[in-house]
Length: 350
Image (tube, rainbow, N blue to C red; front, side, top):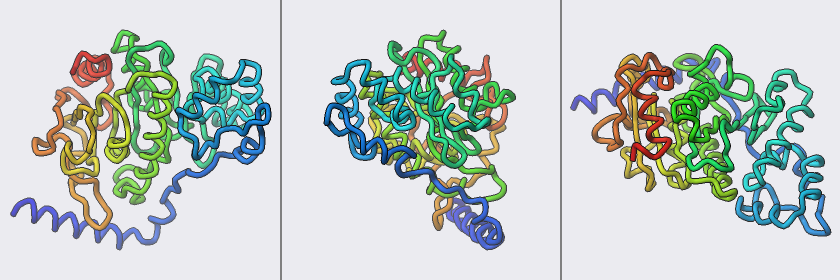
């Protein structure tokens, strides 16, 4: 009865929010960046020794990997110089080529907001300048590491904000650096801000309560992890924060990963671990002062993301987060959560 009453209250609140925000919700709604990258038409019109280039939308990462394996170094670099934005985002292409291509692609935009991504010491694995911009950055040696983790962030992250100096351990890049350090730099970690995230937390706009952006993000995440496998990287661990855990929940059945860690999660669009339809181990953490605990764990009229992953009924393995402060403190050095994350990232927590 209590659960039923809570559902009714949540439904009423959802209806009130929709009615009361009709004047501004559409203005704040984000448009998911999808479709072919700029430069795709020129890429498809090009050939190598009369052979067509792999279709970025239809070729599998494994097919892309085989294509590049058949090229000599000169021809491969010619493609990087001629089509940097396509090669830089082509899952299955060799990692060094993607790093080089994305450096060229960032410079080619001429936009100061992206300039820092072109620094020679950065390993940018994906870059899309459309809209607010999306980016994936590697910390560590992805080609040789025996362990790989992917940070999937939540709201208010894009190519210009994901590595904010003031977010040392709370932004995606900061989380990645902190996790890599906690593993003794034995794991490669990718900060994957590879989808259009919602803007605004608990305030303006309804994207954070909807699954629309997560659905588009899940397609991208599944493709991204398939690309890692195509270049010989080990199956990764997904660390999914806040709205990013919605993305991971929807992508779970389409990814080959060893573990999925949801923290600060509003729900994963599943009633239980079984509902995720994954063979990965599923973990969940929530700090005592994380405001996400105030978000009702229901789905109604397209709003909400379902069951609480930290509940006993959901069935995830619990991670001790008793000393985590707020919604973004899970990677703060010295916390129990970071210690547990590092163990999972290196296989010691299995």
